[in-house]
Length: 183
Ligand code: S3P
Image (cartoon, rainbow, N blue to C red; front, side):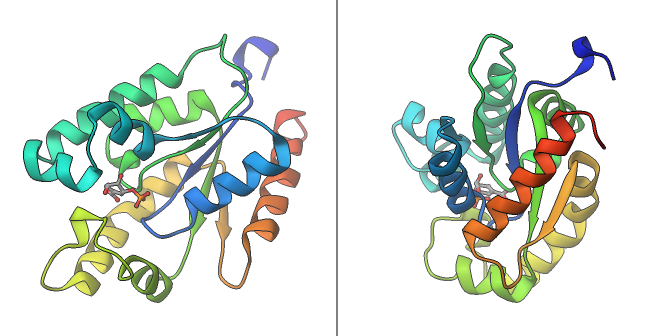
């Protein structure tokens, strides 16, 4: 890979709802000092309402359009290095998966379904899991999305039993190799 093809040195976190992207993003932000872009938060701030309200008022399609538009906007070679924390469904479109890899080093945080269920059942922030049977929905979405996370990611981290600092250390060590071309 020559210099021109080297992706910008952003760290991009992908993974299922409740896999720890926002928390690990904050840890990386503290350790590296790079600004943190939490995509869901940006979408909420711009819309002036929560993700759940966007889904309710405008539908998932509108949310996905905003998500893809924001992702495109983040591809800015003049921007400083950032940590980008995405929403769990960002890998749904091929176009988004391509953009993710243009953005930088893409890390898939993977957590077992039982942990996802435990974390996501603590609040009702996630419209896709407001169903009669969230367990079945997690299983269905996870099965459909796993290959897409795998396709988009440079690195998969199984987060079971690891705290945010340990996960961040793993990411930073691998990213160093990636960005210096030692992969
Ligand atoms: C979604 C995940 C959410 C948010 C929206 C849709 C998804 O983000 O973008 O509710 O499709 O998995 P988190 O992964 O941060 O919960």
